[in-house]
Length: 224
Ligand code: SF4
Image 1: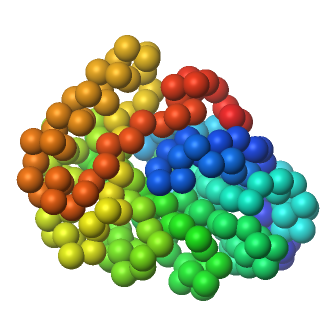
Image 2 (image 1 turned 90 degrees about the vertical axis):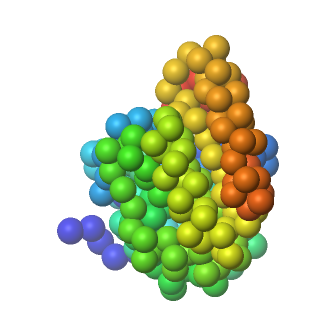
């Protein structure tokens, strides 16, 4: 069992945020070990079964250099990140928590600048919890990020946006799967833009297609 006040940490590093509405802003990334899912296209497999290094919250906080901090994984909410988020908030940091939409910890709401919620669609081989998604959608500081790989994924996104259209305007970001060559990535982005522009519901709800900046710059390299 892990000692109280400790987290299992895979890596802490500084880089620009590569995706979502804070794209391009310098961040410190805190990647925690472990995940409860095994998505087919996961780009952080090294964090899934990794034990991580037991690290005190104070030590993690001392490694944070940027004003924006992204707490990510794996699935970071499998660990108790209350003290980490509170500590960062009290130091004036803007904290993003990335989560796969299977876990919710409402105690964090007062400290979190942005929840980046990523429900998994069919092509992932996994899924998400609708009750958890609804709970996040009640908040203003939420972006909902879907990785869309094929037509089935796209139809799922349309039905989610349709169902929650009163809550999701401007909050939904779509990305293609980035585990591919650059020409293929460009093709996938073009395909996704075309699909969105042809869909009235997504256009009405200000759904965005975004690339992953770090993939364009560094490919699938780790820790950047
Ligand atoms: S939820 Fe995220 S970290 Fe976990 S397997 Fe899926 S993509 Fe990977």
